[in-house]
Length: 313
Image 1 (cartoon, rainbow, N blue to C red):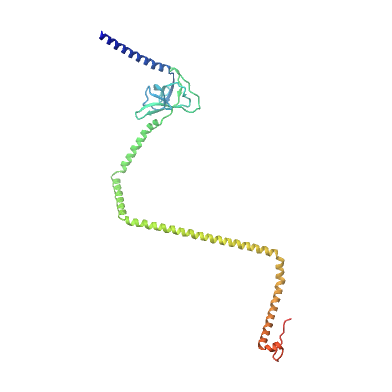
Image 2: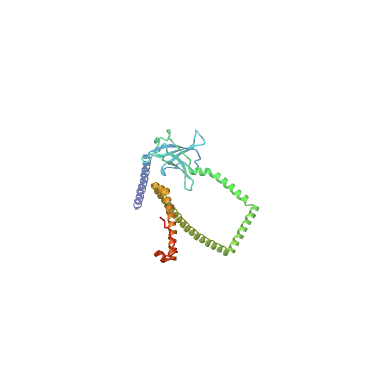
């Protein structure tokens, strides 16, 4: 009886676990069934190596769908047509200006489709929920990874050519020349090391010379200041002389009649005055001589030696 009870308990627990798993699967499927998807085609002009069915589709870095089909384009075999399934959501819209690129995830080499939203220009692409219907096409552009992979062979070729050039440069003759250059460089460095004291002395002399040049330049600057002051003084004096000449010119113009009368009449009268003054001085000289020779006769009018003095009228 006890054994049958244990079996019954185990059966009930097992049945409950199965029912829970079945309900979880139904809940998950219900979420998938309730989710609505729109289907689009993307035509890539380059290789889509690394992209597989069920690969991720990202919109601005957000996972919004999966890749459902990858095939060669029937119209142009050089292109690849990729069908993607994208969730219908209210927070984003696939527009005519949106672009799709193929990118790599990390260093694993797994590719995914990245859709860039584009600007507000251009209307939204139609949402086709039936995968068998005609699907709108999202424009594509080359990614940086594709450009890098395409340029990789050329980079490798250039690297190989560079290595060959280096090998040609490092032949025996060039190696000998390079060894000689290194030897000369070592000799030069040894010479510099041996004459380090002379080099230091030369540097110190140059430093002193630079200081002397600095002092000389200061003196030249001071001398130039003095010259500037002297030039300013000369300029001021020239201005003063100019003003004096202008004043003299104005004075002569205002007294032109008086100056002219003085020139014609005053100078003549001044000449007469000079002649009379000379005669007066001569007479006074004779009177002084008479007074010195005979003071009593000069004062009292007596004596035979008295000479008459002609005074000017």
